[in-house]
Length: 258
Image (cartoon, rainbow, N blue to C red):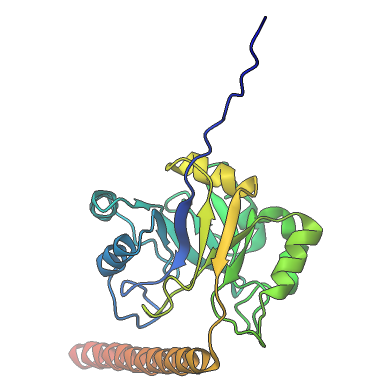
């Protein structure tokens, strides 16, 4: 008589991940905490995977990777690129490759790179909105962003598009302030390596963990964010004015010498 036995397949422990984060190294936004400070906080809160996605620049190095690894975190290279004035998350992109339009973005598609639509239906010129479905074949996943309340939630359209078009949905904080970090994140059922994580996301082995913000939290974050953007705009004007002054002085000196 053959005894039947049940073989249990061990499912990997879900990885706590946030794949859309900004730090003080961001050239466009005035973020007060550094990449290392964020990694340390993430380690204290039990995160396994992070991607620092500053605007137009990759904040990633072997030193930073080792710093995260020593704290139990896999750091994935990332950037929040601007394509035709729309934001796109590139995770583990080919170094040195830039895309000025969506046709160039298509050339960055590869198994080792994940292309995510961040806050796709939020109001504002930098969200993809109608461009998402127009170029839907370029994207691997859509983002569920932390900034919403029980009454106002621009993520709902992203959820509907995922359901109707089969996109995976991942939770990210898009944190610019430490108070945002941990409000929305993903649980990814994968081994702790890049290939397994990207495969799991594409296969929708992801859970979004999130909570709505209170009206006070939304108001506070909105005020701080607008203040940060206004400060960056003023500083940008001052830098450009200084550069124009220096250029003008150099031309005058040149003319004087001549």
